[in-house]
Length: 110
Length: 235
Image (cartoon, rainbow over all chains, first blue to last red):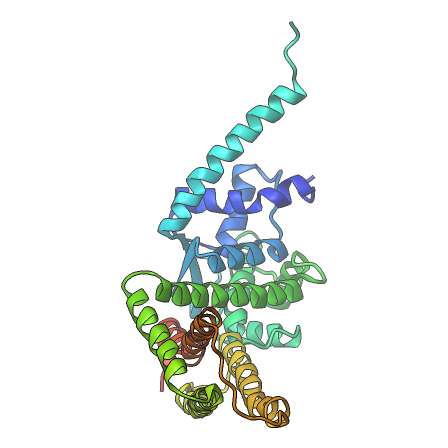
């Protein structure tokens, strides 16, 4: 289920929303958080997550910061001002989309 | 407190990345942290699991193309970031206050074209300055952007690639001039149409800004960003 195109298209929105709620996060933490919230129903693969993060960074929606943790560097991602605006509009768009899909899939019988 | 990755094991993880064809340190960092975090999590439930076993099961999650996909996408993302930086730098010259400079330079060149008898002289001078500038800065940049490590960085390699391409392109100009212009019998060219002249002036000024951006502005930005991220490699 987690491999469906439906989820792939929403990966950016998921990542942005998580960063919006949690502030700074690193890659591994994001995959774990998604698993936790969806109680393991949804798994983000590493091969998909990092390209998405790098793409969002290149677009200027995310910024990065390095910190030392257990003798190694850890790259934290956080939303830029532009990213915050984009997240708000993406979330509204997504909610409208879900409403429309709901209407289409569960037409009210009159 | 559960087991954590030691410095020795971190080294092994970097080596693991290299063995899987991820040679750039700036790409390795994130993968190493990811692998290490995943292994540490495994140890929370099974403290006796060996490092190699834990690594093996973690790497499986990446899939066969996992690493290479991340590597390739990172390059793409870098290209995008670079272009975005370049574009925002360039468009500034067409917005107030830098627009004033652009207008002055463009009209200055426009007037020069009217004053100088042979327009080719202006072209020659322009390209000569451009070539000298690009060649000088290329070598200056190569000398200046040194890092205190033997590690390879995708960011630096990418920038070097862009600058080398520019250098090669610019060095084609004398060749082009030789073949296109010197073969024309009458090597005096005078363009009368003011609209064409204005267009040429605009293009030449824009090319100047672009070259300056590629050779000085962007490399400086990248260098600054690089040493902010990796202060320990600053020379």
